[in-house]
Image (tube, rainbow, N blue to C red; front, side):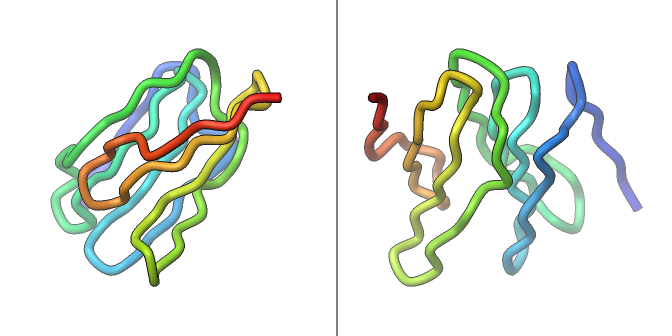
Length: 88
């Protein structure tokens, strides 16, 4: 129905929940896309490639993932707003 490419590709994978697809890409972006159309709903940029499949807590609506600099991110799945980051 639709396809999407990301600079550097996507190694970690994607998460589908209800009407959205969440993708952590090698170009340092995390995107939420409409499942039916592929249109970007929001995009968030990190400092380097993202290594994990995003994980969604459906109770709180929070999306979690980490990047190659071992930084863990927590975003609001609805709008991509950063809630917190953790870096050791």
